[in-house]
Each structure stands twice: as structure tokens, then as C-alpha cells.
Length: 226
Image 1 (tube, helix red, strand yellow):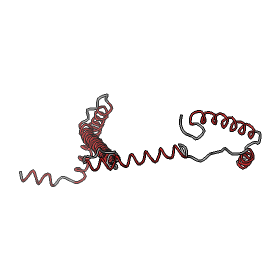
Image 2 (cartoon, rainbow, N blue to C red):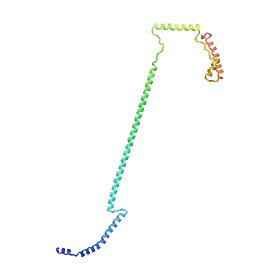
Image 3 (tube, one colour):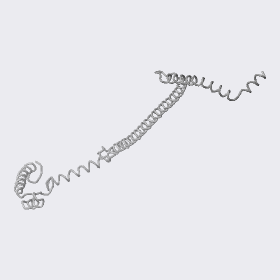
Image 4 (spheres, one colour):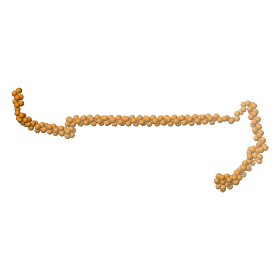
């Protein structure tokens, strides 16, 4: 073994370089060919309809997993956003309905309060209407009171009979209508056409002439009713 080592070690350098070059020249084409075959196989695995390159599949699996995770996050975020908007909408709707019911309660209480006030005023006015002073002539309970009432009644009747006998009943002053000149002045004051004067004067004269015989025939010359 030691002798062999001595022999190897004592091989000249030129011989060793030549042997290395020869070995390299023999293995290099095979090395290139193997590498080229491996690259062609990788290219074929990448350009196939369904790629089956292991590294490509690993990278694609990582990308698909990342994409799936990202899509899951986006979908979950979208779902949470929709739920948040839905809850906000429900809360706002509940708030609006609450405000509406509160406003309706306030209006109802206001109307009921006003109706109660009106009803109280109506009842108070109705009760006050029946609390007027009584002017009825009550039948006297005592004999002395009845005697005084009879004397007062007879006195009033005797006074009225005396007036009717000596003065005339009803004892009212004589009344006369307006003259034609007064009528024209009144019409001119209120700016009415003067052609209405004759019509009004004729109407007054006719009414006076019609009423005088009627009053005389009913009450007589002294004014007493026949």
C-alpha cells in the first residue's frame, strides 16, 4: 500500500494533467447532455397542458393558498361589512320609529289635554248656565203674604183702569213720519239718487193712510180697544 502511494505520488505532473484533461473531455459532453435533457424535461413539464413540475406545483400551491386565504379574508370582511350596515340600518330604523312613537304620544297627550280643557270649560259653562237667578213668581205660603200680593195687584189694576178711562190706553205720544224735505236731506247725505224720494214719500204716505183707520177702528177715538 505504501509502495503504491509512493508510485502515485511520484507520477509526473504533466501526466496527471493529461489524464485529467482526458477525463474531462470524456465526461463533459455527457454532463452537458444530462443537463440539457433535464432542462428539456423541466421545460416539457412546465409547457404541458397540465404542468407537473414539482417546484412549479409547490410555488403554485403556495400562491393558491395565499389567494384562497386572501379571498377568504375579503369575503369575511365583506360579510362583516354587510352585517354592520344591516345592524346600523336596523338601529336607525328603530330610532326613527322610537322618535315617531314619542312624537305621536306627545301629540296625543297634547290633544287629550286640550280636549279635557274644552270639556271642563263646556261643563263649567253648562253648570253656570243653570245657576241664573230665579225670577219665578212663587205662590206665597202665608196668608199675610197672599193678602199683600192681592192688594198690590188690585192697586195696579185700578191705576191701569184709570189711565185707560181718562187718558187712553196705551198712553203713548203721537208719532209722525219724516217729511219730504227731511227724507230728501237724508238721501242726499247718504248720496242716494233723488228720484227715490218720491217713491219713499209715497210709501210713507200710503203706510200712514192705511194704518190710521185701522188703529182708529180697533182702538176708538180715545185709544181704548173696542
